[in-house]
Image 1 (cartoon, rainbow over the protein chains, first blue to last red):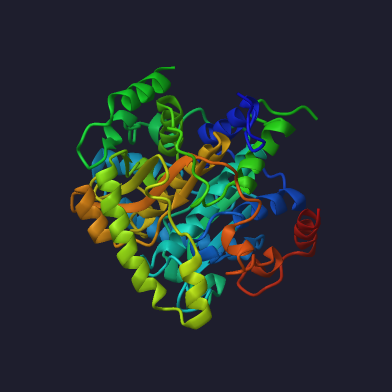
Image 2: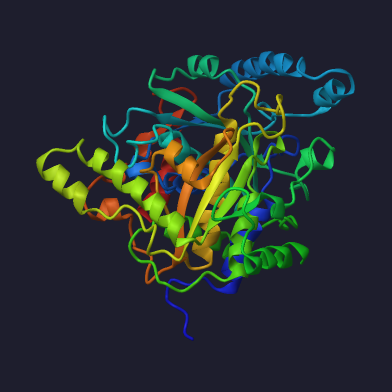
Length: 235
Length: 235
């Protein structure tokens, strides 16, 4: 059978899977080398080509070089992280505090990806039933950028321990603009073989088989499909 | 300079960008050929390797082969779409109704990716400040799967015109489980060169340059970085 012209070669397909499986949430391995403008441009272009509800393209990109802005964001993180640490007692608390959870100042570049909730006017195609689809679209842009970064050898970490109202104030965001993702980017000394929270015993990877349902919740997946999953995950 | 061992070759990098730029939201080009179990397994494994807040892995996957379930979902779509179409008057309304916005019955496979909002217990690392980070993580899994599908020659469409409460009832979801994405998958006759909503004149792609800010909202991007963006987007 001849391949259609849109088919990927096996090597191209494997490269996409390599990016997916070797991508990491990076906090500790940043090198100071600057990200070149053309590389940054490819990453931003990749994000901008994410799917969006009704072709809304609700995102903006704040490229943060300023050390002053980053120090203000770091202070927001510190306050939130102190609050979060208080949720864990004793050993778990000590383990929590030992984790490095952001690279705001060590990474050479910070990036905030926002969502303008009013873009496209009152009626955005496909956003009638689920208002959050604009935020979801913005997340798809984040993942495009994250995978492109891995392919460029650039590590990326998403800092989620932030008060979004305070962050919006520091960044001067208009009222209708929500800061979905605050990201740290830079070249890295290495990409860890496994997620850091897995290696450090915080949480285990859930077996994929236990997350699969057939047709309706709680029904078994078709046997042939489950066998396919077992085969892939044993290899 | 020698490349670090984690570096992608230029060909691998280009393959990742090819998946990102040639990915489409597919509604009309589905072929009836079934998706083989091992291919489906690779797609699900890719989704499961998305980043998630606190390694929460909040997702489950409902693989929907049943025609009966799909007909029920299609009925939910029809009701919501009729409601949505009423938002557009005259010519815009006629244009809206002419668009094909889902492939629930024509695609050989439907997939619902859900988010269990209670997974990981009361305190999930990194989810203290922004409760929606579990939904955002689930979206990152969707995009992993979407790009992997493109590399496998499989088209994917996200159906967002659905009442999520009715959808949850049809799929029998527990109360704490939210259906983030209802997806249609299958091999396709072609991937369109551009998004369908762009080609049909519904909305234009926004120039990337107009979405970029430096350090704070509304401040210009550094000149070298903006020149990089212009160079990439002219080529």
